[in-house]
Length: 142
Image (tube, rainbow, N blue to C red; front, side, top):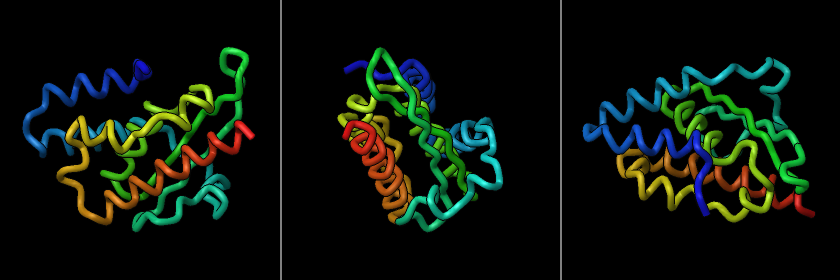
């Protein structure tokens, strides 16, 4: 399965960055470019459990190619995590729910070398975000 162009662009840019500090800076820039959620969207029902930092994900149903799909928006109070949110949104947003449910972001993050320098807490938070997104997709399919 081919990945969405926004995610592929991020993967291509990361391939040029050998130094982990440069990759951190790039993640921070990606996160800073995300639009902020409305104050009302930073609510308990949008909060991702399992993250040490505060993370909110908003899933909006849409029809894509005649099938159920989802658009995601998100935000975190931590700069690196905000960057991880940006990468996840590039991978999962505006896609059919079946593709979202079937896409293993953790494997892709490992291929890109994005998890190897994350703390255990950030890595666990990443898994929690991915599980939340994929569960939203499964719910949209049922």
